[in-house]
Image (cartoon, rainbow, N blue to C red; front, top):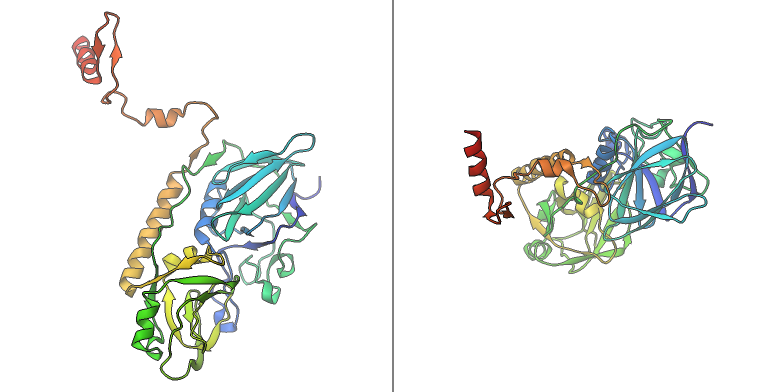
Length: 365
C-alpha cells in the first residue's frame, strides 16, 4: 500500500485544512486564519486523542466525501451535520457526529450538509502529514497560503495521514453537543467608539442585526439600523483583530473574522470578546444577532469560565455505549441503595431501599 491518506472523491462546497491559526505574523501583513469555531476543532481533536491545535478539515455548509487509503483510520466530526459511511457492496450506513468512528481501507466517509451553523470539523487520529507554513497548517485561500496550494479540497486531492492505521481502543463520544450559550454577542466598545454619535452607540447596543449575504471567512456584513459617525468614517489605517467591528460610510457594521486584513481605515465601534468568537464564526446569512457591552475584566472572566467548560466537556468524553446495551460505567456511578425503588420480597412484603439497607445491616451484625 502507498503512503496512508484520504482521497477526495467528492469535494463538497468549501472545505479547508485549518488549525488554531498562524499566530504572530500580523505585523508582516499575514492574517491569522485558522478555525472559525476553535472550540469544535479542539473537541474533535480531543475525541481522537490529538493535541488541541492539530489541523483538521473545516467543512462549510456541505462537506466532501473522503475515501480511506490506509489500513484504517479513526475520525471524529464535531458540529451539526449529517454523515455516513459508504462501503462497496453495502448500503450506506448513517454515522453520528460528536463521536469517533473507525473506518477501514476502501471505506468512504461522506460528509453531508451542515445544519444550524456555518461550519463543522473533521479530525483524524494522528493528524495530517502536511508541511506547515510559518508554523501552521491553516489555509488562507485569498493568498493561496497553506496545504494543497492554499486551496479548498478539490476533486481527487489527497490528504496524507500521519498514522498507517487507527489506534487501538474503543470508540468514544461526547455525552451531548457543547452548549455555546445564547443571548447578545458580548463586545468591548472601541477602540474608536468616540467617532460615533451617542445615539449610534445606543442603537448598536439595542438593535437587532442580521448577517447579510456577503459573509465569508473574511467577515460578516451586517444589515440593520445605520450608525452615524461624528464626521468622517475614515481614520488613519491601524491594526485589526478578529472580532473588530468596522463601520464604513454607509453606517452598516462589518464584523471581521479569521481571514480579515491586518490593517484598515474605517472607525471601529467595538470588538467581540474572544469567548464569543466561536459563536459568531458559526453564523450564517440571515442569522440574527444583537450586542451587549462588557468591560475588559468581565471579558477575561468570561473567557476563563469558558475554558473551564471546555475542560469539563473533554473530561466527560466516554466510551460509546453499545446499541441496546447497558452502560455499566454509568450504572456503577449511581447510588443504587438510597433510591426510591421498591421491590417485593419472597413473603410478599414491599421493601423500599431504606428497609433493604436496614435488613442488610441487621444481618451483617
